[in-house]
Length: 524
Image (tube, rainbow, N blue to C red; front, side, top):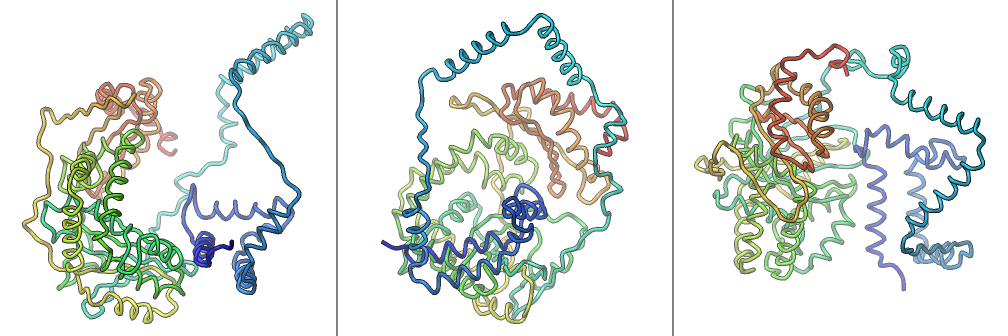
């Protein structure tokens, strides 16, 4: 019956993006290119054939443009009329593993009977020799033959990302001129600290909803399709953080701008350079006009978010535990827990019981406050015509104006104090637990802070691994430092005895402090 042209357009854009975009995915970009070179190389092509994407993709686009039913004919020729096919059926069989094990034992007994006394002895000696090799450490000479990096292999110079702060009729635009392979990345940042404190717990729901709604004249499915045909991606994210004391602002402050150390909502988009203008226009429309009157869609989004949050506790329990332990250390820790932690799950259970119209009214009011709070823009692209890009940004977002000054009277909701600064959450549905502990770290930018980063790696791969994972039976144990917030955190993952792990962590620290780490271990 034919493929809708809009779906083909979205699929083509997605394919072009996935091949053009330079980003880490299970390793550095260089390894991704090496793997891509193998696609054709293992079939007899040159290694670079499958790296040279643009010419092949342009041919595909031209072929599709010249034949209205290009993909439909492709399906008929290569799939429906293709006689070379295999039908594989896999059906479950009761007691399959038991039968397989019995067959193996039968073969082994038959094999054993076929061996002479000398052959049996030779097999025993061979197995003993293998076991001895497996339990014997390699010689220092052999270990030295394994290639490895040393600290001297690494550059000590800091690679600085270029940045320019542009003041466009009061609208601050931070720009970075980098090679992006024809893709523009744009962050539209609105401060959220003009909202009253009672609205803060609503912001995760707001960010989830505004990106999943329709606009006047288009339902959410049509908007989603239009985004897929226009942008590489469009999403929202909340951010809060502390600006380290006495650090150079790097050109980020201005006599008439209030920027540093605030909480923000980011609308993040990425688009091919040639589709930047329609992407900006669509982003603005979604931000300003998202249809918060669609009661059914709002209710679906609330239920979906609540269910996803409940389902995340078991696989992400270590994150929830760490956020909770960080929350008592600072306002930033408290706000991060309110947005992403157990407090947010508790809030969603409250919202699910509310009248949908009350939810709509609250979310719409938050949107009105945010879009009236001013904004700043961060853009990264390989500028061919910087003036043209700045003009587009001013055209679509100049009327928002710069960020308005924050409300100094806001008090971040803090968790009540508890006895001995220890909390315990019990869940009947989980078979394992999670533990977390947070201490103060050294100040950001100090030598001691740098040492703590190395210490975290050493603890995570050494003493914590040995004592909590190997001996304690937890799936994982980690140390993590956040210097800008003065958090030195420990967490365990899928832990059969989290309370015991909390006692083990101080013991590990005391043992590490009283011992000497040898030079070779430190180098690693």
